[in-house]
Image 1 (cartoon, rainbow, N blue to C red):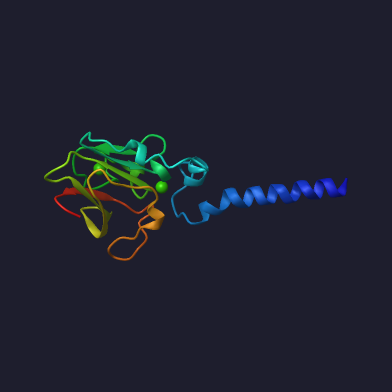
Image 2: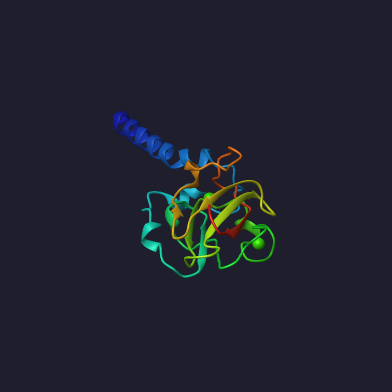
Length: 156
Ligand SMILES: [Ca+2]
Ligand SMILES: [Ca+2]
């Protein structure tokens, strides 16, 4: 009996550890479910979602999973205001998909701060970022859950 309980305890501990660990890397507010709860073992769907629609899509979990937190054909100078990417979208982005039309302003530069400041990362036309945890802004700071604005640019 003791051995059985002990085995269960170990299993639960390992399971809990594997679920909780990704959350430790996140400093996001807890009003929404954590990335770990949603992303789990979900597949990377970014490549399968590349198309030419004119939109850039911003996802709050990895792999372009679920619905984007926001999608737009335009610039957005503040993910925390009430237009476009808004409110809780600020400092949430973990994957990005640029489905802009090719030509002209077809690349998207994402910034750490509102009003296009604080360092940036750039996603080329019909390119994507599956996990911003692997990317840093030009300022050297990790880009996961830190994007606050974006604009369309002619080249990355
Ligand atoms: Ca996120
Ligand atoms: Ca906005």
